[in-house]
Amino acid sequence: MGVLRRKFGRVEAGTAQGAEGAWHLSLARAARDATGLSPEVTAGRETRVSLAELVEHLADRSLIAMLDEGEGAALGLCALAPPLLSGLVALLTTGRAPLDPETPRRPTRTDAAMLAPLIDAALSGWAAELAAQEDGAFADGWRYASFLEDARPLALLLEDTAYRLFRADLSLPQGGVAGQVLLALPAAPRPRRSPQPAQMAAQADAALADAAQADGFRTAFSRQVETVACRMDAELVRITLPLGQVMALAVGDVVPLADATVARLLLRGVDGQTIAEGKLGQMRGQRAVRLSLPADPAPLPAPQIAG
Image 1: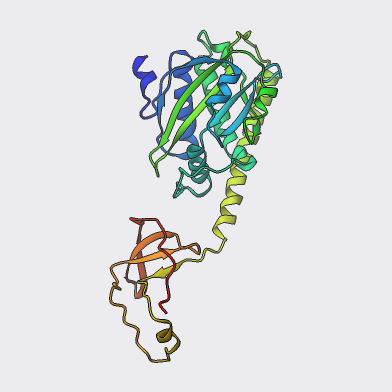
Image 2 (image 1 turned 30 degrees about the vertical axis):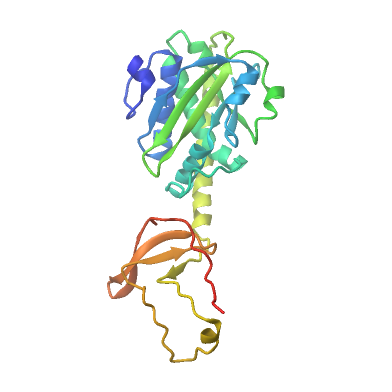
């Protein structure tokens, strides 16, 4: 159990003991199924916190998913830190990690809709892991309910009571996507529910409908992204010329490019940011550029014109 609590490497078959271990294992499995990648989960220790302390644990611009235990009697939350949010959304929409996952952005309802199936899968797997254990009633029935843009309404939405707080650092091997996941649920004991077959069928149908809706959204969103025009400038070298020489240029004049080389060019966006580096060459009789990630992504200063 000590090894399980310290580190999850590859997701393996088996049953974890305790609510903390089962949550980390289920979260890793849900992330694997959603992204197709093999996640790593570094486990943090479970703690009990007050409502005020819980709000202080939430990183600015985290995705705050409100959780409902199914009967409207209690609420909890699952929060994804900004780097992990950006990375997961990029992987689910484009199949690639973002170039700068560390830059935080405000989460949106679209982000929440895309990640709700992953959260629900982690919660349902968690409940299944604990079904025959002491914490079975505690984990049973929780699922995604709504989304908050920031933490300010939590003091009104959540009951002022003690919460069990589970921390997990989730990382994916592609593009350095990593960040913390916080799960907070009321610590008060809950009676174990015995759902009727009709309720179980309705829950299964709802889960399938949510998954189908998420898949449809991802497909439509990917098609929209693929049709968006993206302008890039290929740059061999930058030079500075006196204004008088520039004004005197005529057809047939030769401008020396002393530092230019076909072994290196830069692709820049409209904002001057370096997107990629490359080498000029040929492929099947056509001019081609072999791309690589930029060594220095900082944009060059704007060209200056000497007087």
